[in-house]
Structure formats: structure tokens, C-alpha cells
Image: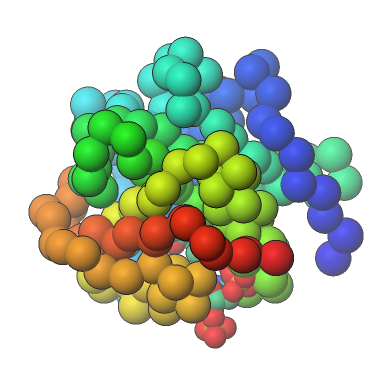
Length: 168
Ligand SMILES: CC(C)(COP(=O)(O)OP(=O)(O)OC[C@H]1O[C@@H](n2cnc3c(N)ncnc32)[C@H](O)[C@@H]1OP(=O)(O)O)[C@@H](O)C(=O)NCCC(=O)NCCS
């Protein structure tokens, strides 16, 4: 599948909520959350006024002119917050595009970008009930550094040290 990775344009920031919704999808067999969940203040943190904080950065995957995936970072006091120098990362693709290697390419592009900007580390949180996503992050070198109660369930906090790493 031919895809292009590029920066998200400011006029597209409204689409971030769609990808946040995909990222917090119910685990397999679970009840899918209503989109109202996106109004919770702890989830608004990820998208509100995106582009106004210095570390805000978003890459998207475009296929045939449409955005099908996004990976963004922001320094914020979210579930995976480590300190005020460490960006938190979110990645999600629409379901039809998962499992084709696109997510790996997208996140590696973002990790390289963060390393080039001299960020020392990056963090994220992942629901304990979706082990295959945890595996995806472990393959990239992320390690569990803690646990947190997320918006609906327990989550692992994972961290990746960026110094001296090559994500090509
Ligand atoms: C997690 C995600 C970004 C991975 O991107 P991807 O393009 O599907 O992943 P790749 O094809 O590059 O790599 C495949 C690996 O991703 C993992 N994976 C996680 N969720 C997956 C999914 N829904 N479908 C397929 N693979 C998935 C598996 O470890 C898989 O490895 P395996 O084939 O050995 O099991 C993507 O699947 C996704 O957006 N999933 C739904 C939203 C989500 O869970 N976001 C993260 C919340 S913390």
C-alpha cells in the first residue's frame, strides 16, 4: 500500500480527536466507548489548542489524499507524564490500515525527529488489556516504567530513551 508521511497541517488539527478515539478504543470484545469520552478534561489534554505548545508535533500518514493515521507528541500532564522535558506520544491508525507495517514506519519517523530535536526520552501509556500494542512498543525499545489508572482501566506507562538510538 503506497503511503506518504508528512507533517499535519494546522487546518487538519481537528482530525486529531478521531485518532485519539482510535487510540483509546475498547479492547477486543469490549464495549466501544462513546465519542463523548473525548470531552473528558484528561483526554482534552491531548488535542486542545494543539500547535500552541513548543513541543507539539504531529506526523500523519496519507493514502490517496486522505489521512489514515497520526502520531503526535506533546509535553503535558497526561497519564504517561514523566517530567516537563519528556514528550508524551500518541499513535493510531484507522482499523483498515493496521497490521501492514505503516504504524512502525510512522512511529520510527517521529522517534527520529524527536532524537534530532535532542529530546532525551519519550513516554506513552497503553491499556494493559491490549498486549499486542504493548508488544508493538517493546519491539521499538520502549520499556514499562510504571502503571497508572487511565480513563477507564489500568495502563502501563512506557518510556523509550532516545540517545544513541537509530530508528531507521
Ligand atoms: C498500534 C498501531 C499504531 C500499530 O501500527 P500497525 O501499522 O498496525 O503496526 P505494524 O503493522 O507496523 O506492526 C504490527 C504489530 O503491531 C501490533 N499491533 C497492535 N495493534 C494492532 C492491530 N490493531 N492490528 C495489527 N497489529 C497491531 C502487533 O504487535 C503487530 O505485531 P504482530 O503482527 O507480530 O502481532 C495500530 O495497530 C493502531 O493504531 N491500533 C489501534 C489503535 C491503538 O491501539 N493505538 C495505541 C493505543 S496506546
